[in-house]
Image (tube, rainbow, N blue to C red; front, side, top):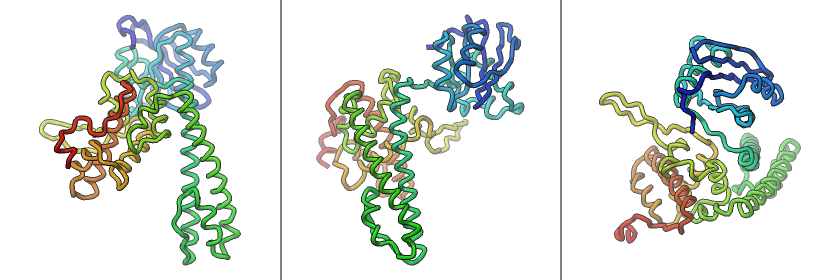
Length: 355
């Protein structure tokens, strides 16, 4: 919880850049008491902010904000990490420079912390463990891009490679390459084979981490379509199961709820907010594809999606997938909090189950 702003004598705004950051101190009277620059390194920031004394410090979310916020909190400062997408004074200010941004951060923090739409960073341990998952995701994307390049190159000379999984691609298509392209594409197949080996190693590491450190992921894996990767990413991204008073709030946190732009009688239907973690949202939508797909078992979640999709067009089916992903996010949080046994037809009437 943030402290009462009325008791704050001053606030510091910190505009962070890669090499050098700018800070502005606004005093109790609302005047700029001090401004300066400091190197964006742990020793320099620690020295400068020890000198400034404890207080509230506001900075924008960014690549450096996790470690800087942890450093300043250890020094006794109250740190507010602002979401610039929600703070139009920063994002669309007419005087857009480092000092002006730092001053706006300080004034908003001094007036009301919630005006900065505060972001809560996860702990260092969770961040380091998520790095394992994100490294795997990067490697999967790189392998996909390489495979697509090989297929497109072969197709451009009138050839066609056989369909197969990404894991089997290098071995299955090696002999199918046109003679004139083997010198160019052969090394890429070796790269794909190496990437596959490394991805499997990441998969084993993810399994070990889930079993040894996060056994609660087992409750989440009860839901068909939710594997170890999704369950562990979910737990590490949310980090604290108690941070949400209601499980329904998870959908909004992960950007799976529609935007709102209501004015009078105008209530347009908008796309989802896409707030929160992009990769976790992607995994949940992939799970929704399985749940709604040909191999997904009959469950209340599937019936919910089918009712929304109906026999409509592709856009309606996409909205149904997002709605299933949102409902899945809520369900996973509920299972995580309670540790209950998953009931596929929980909340459904008997005639719905029979249908």
